[in-house]
Length: 114
Image 1 (cartoon, rainbow, N blue to C red):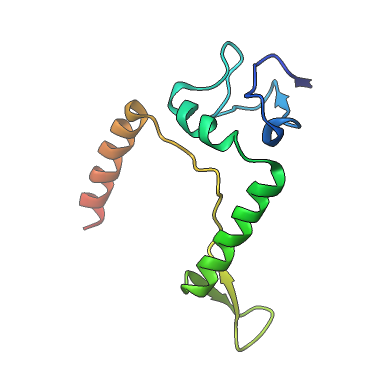
Image 2 (cartoon, one colour; image 1 turned 120 degrees about the vertical axis):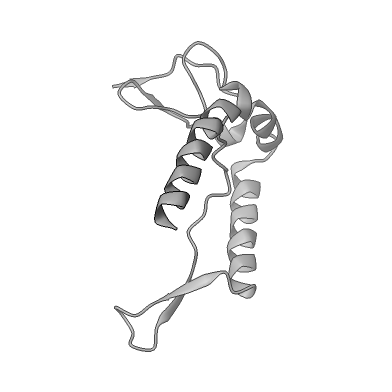
């Protein structure tokens, strides 16, 4: 079931955004326009059209490739196919409260592994 109860930024970039009742949305929430820690990013990104955002994304991919931020796969070609590391131009932001919990677990795990 699709719902459209949250207020999205007025932007071409979000004009086709859909909410699904059964799925967690880390950026937008029903009772307000966006999760607080995404506000500044959304303000910045909302100024881009879909075309401009696509151009920036392609530029980033070419930049990764030209700087060697790649890995090789050998299943299709014995000499290897060079691919860029997957990434998303729209970053995922971890709020400080969540990061504090993650940091404790990561430190603990690092100590256990070492």
